[in-house]
Each structure stands twice: as structure tokens, then as C-alpha cells.
Length: 90
Image 1 (tube, one colour):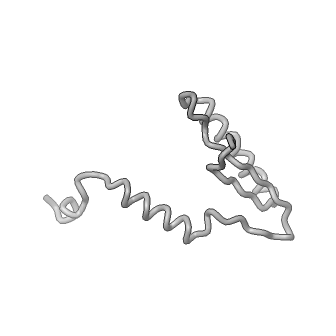
Image 2 (image 1 turned 120 degrees about the horizontal axis):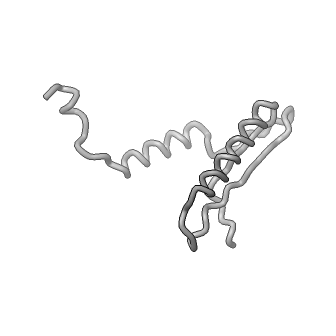
């Protein structure tokens, strides 16, 4: 085997990867809204899917449409925030 192949792990370590990615997101400020008085805010808060049902294409469509809205508003000069994971069930 090549030296590169010897360095690649045999299995994916989810916990390690998740911690590294999350730390990078925190460092990059992905979970912070920027307050810019020069720009009008546009925010969408994304609740998680209900646990009482199965995930389906409607969930994917909903998130896709929200993504389109946020990106469109950003191109129009809005200060946008698309915040996932809020509890909508109390």
C-alpha cells in the first residue's frame, strides 16, 4: 500500500469529525447574528421536524425553499440569518 493509504483511517469516526466541524463553525461565528444598522434584517427560524412522523420530501422542500428565500434576500442587501434547531413545541 502507498503511504497515503496507510494514513487514511479504515472507518469514519463520527464523534471526532462532528466535534471538529462544530468547533470550526463556532470559530467562524456561524451561530451569531451580525447586527448591521445599515442593512435591513431578514431572519428565518427553522424548527426541527416533529418526532411524531417520518421525514419525507416535504421536509426537504421546505428547507430548500427557506434556503432560497435567505439567499435571495442576501443578494438584495439584507443582513440574513437562517437559524436552525429551535424548539417549536414548547
